[in-house]
Amino acid sequence: MSIIKDVLAKAKQIDPDQPEFHQAVEEVMETLEPTTKRHPEFVKANIYGRIVEPERTIIFRVPWVDDKGNVHVNRGFRVQFNNAIGPFKGGLRFHPSVNLGIIKFLGFEQIFKNSLTTLPMGGGKGGSDFEPKGKSDGEVMRFCQSFMRELVRYIGAETDVPAGDIGVGGREIGYLFGYYKKIRNEHTGVLTGKALEYGGSLIRPEATGYGTTYFTAEMLATRGLDFKNKIVAVSGAGNVAQYAVEKVNQLGGKVITLCDSTATIVDEQGIDAKKCDFIMELKNVKRGRIKEYADKYNTCCIEGASVWDVIRDQGIKVDIALPCATQNELDGSHAAALVKNGCICVAEGANMPSTPEAVKIFQENNILYGPGKAANAGGVATSGLEMSQNSLKLSWTREEVDNRLLIIMKSIHKACVETAEAYGKKGDYVTGANIAGFTKVARAMLAYGVV
Image (cartoon, rainbow, N blue to C red; front, side, top):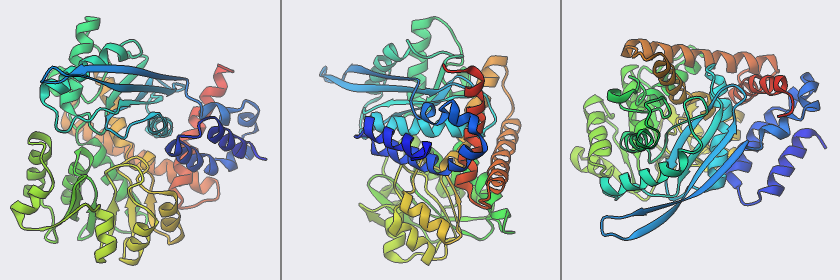
């Protein structure tokens, strides 16, 4: 049995109830097989076995009081996965689906994503099974303060720098950072995604969506194509989806779909800049449902279905697909429908939104496929730029940050293409991203000895 198969077998044996983590490890490890022959030193030092085991897993109780005086308790997590190339770095997710397996899968992916950015950031992730939707600002604040009372023990500007993720936006980051300052009596760059008024970076809210679109444009360019006049399907309606829509519009494409957990809207006329502004107001300020878009603009709304369900069931033609919602949202049947309906490119704005079966279908049909660790790395890259600005006590202009983001996404694309070709997998962005991200971290781990 190869070392790769040994690692996979052990991961499943010792953590049998973590399917998302197993999926992430399998997807990465299977593409790393060629490195075992080229780098026997990695095998000897068992880098493969060590990199799938978190350095530290923290689980804690989060008690909080609602507006009626009732006491609730949730579970909090922080998985500090690997800090070989820099402080642990990765978002916090507040959603009822959160469990240890999901946080481990996200933290594991973050190792390679952060490595690809070229910035000195390790991999980590955290969160809670708390649901911020439907809660008052006071309830969210009290939860965040209770969460930070425990998390504060484990984070720091040079140790572990969390950010936002699903369910953790500007409001939550503000409450978390405010309480960190209160406890520690210091103003440091311990969280990213902060508002501009207290140390945030321009372009940070836009970064993941913009970065995904920049990466997609680089992929399209390899075939002499661009976004102009392309029909684009975007899933989700949160931060990533909103700014993906905005940037696609700027690059000449037409986005026709968005969704939330309750429904999907299809607007054949395109979600233009004015409509995108409405979505941002609806989701970020009013915290409303996507159905309200359909009511306002008299468009198609299908309740209880995802974007990919609707495209499959109604045979809608799209040229480019940007899944920006959540893990495993796009399965094999959806992938087959996209191929049948003329899709030429898929880039993941979310983390692991395509199932293994879907990825296989994309690759077998020569679809340009950008995995999340490469395509959506713009968010954490700009978090890294926020860390740099905090350290320097400076604020860069919008143009400067956006230009740095574009350069980073071009660099990630180049690394994926060149690494895939170097390992005999020309055009395979999955292999390219995994090996490029892995080898940098592996060399650092090797340099440290067995620690």
